[in-house]
Image 1 (tube, rainbow, N blue to C red):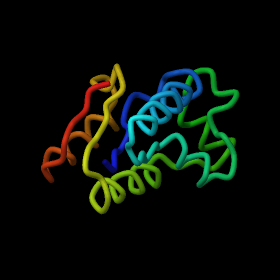
Image 2 (image 1 turned 60 degrees about the horizontal axis):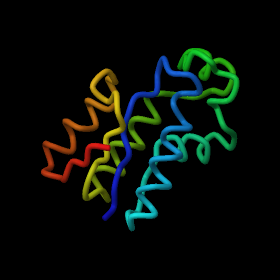
Image 3 (image 1 turned 90 degrees about the vertical axis):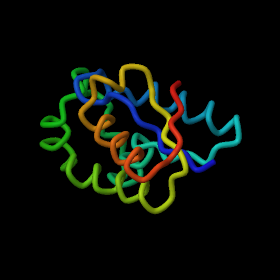
Length: 116
């Protein structure tokens, strides 16, 4: 199943990338094709923008790496609309503006929801 991975990032050390990496590996081991925004951010920027960002501050990532939350969310929503069959939600997704928006999009287009 083509699965988009969503969860809290902003305000969490290293944007919660370690949790995204672990969840993506588990989902892949279970047979899912996974789109992880953490992996996409690293690929897009050509480096891990989370390293050294102990507060998960998007302003710091923008200043130091040119990272754009707007562009990242556009990529995420595009993949959801064009490819996803499901969304997998990491613990704490409820407190994430981005994950809530992604879930609303998934619900609007009628995809499956997986709670991790």
